[in-house]
Image 1 (cartoon, rainbow, N blue to C red):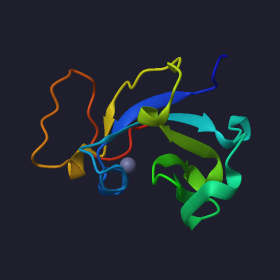
Image 2 (image 1 turned 120 degrees about the horizontal axis):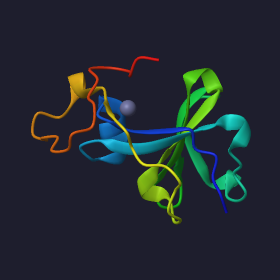
Image 3 (image 1 turned 90 degrees about the horizontal axis):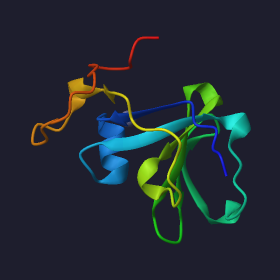
Image 4 (image 1 turned 135 degrees about the vertical axis):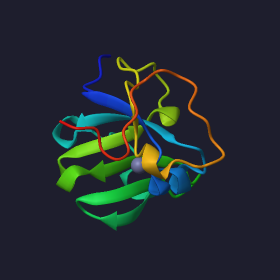
Amino acid sequence: MADEFEYSAYCHCSNCRRTTGSAFKPFAGIRRANFKLVRGLTCLLVFGEENGNDSHCKLCGSLVFSVVRDGVYTHVPMGTLVDDPTIRPTKHIFVGSKAPWYVITDDLPQYAEHAPG
Ligand SMILES: [Zn+2]
């Protein structure tokens, strides 16, 4: 089944590093209106507000999605996806707060904070 992802990136910000326990978070962005949680609503452990949060599974602790951009978009960490998404990360964002012990080895564009546009 086709997904509705609109953009994808590797985020190196400290929040994404902490919540994933990794050097960065590969994520895919989808309009919240197109994102449907079909199961497990009662199993969510939500850190943050209605329009800005990280939602984890309270059974296994996995980060399932984040509500971002004033609640208009949802960012799905690509490592949690079972199916191959239609999209690939096209850039590195928040490289200004990248972990000093991690070296980016690909040629994708890098932005100190959000990518322009
Ligand atoms: Zn981030």
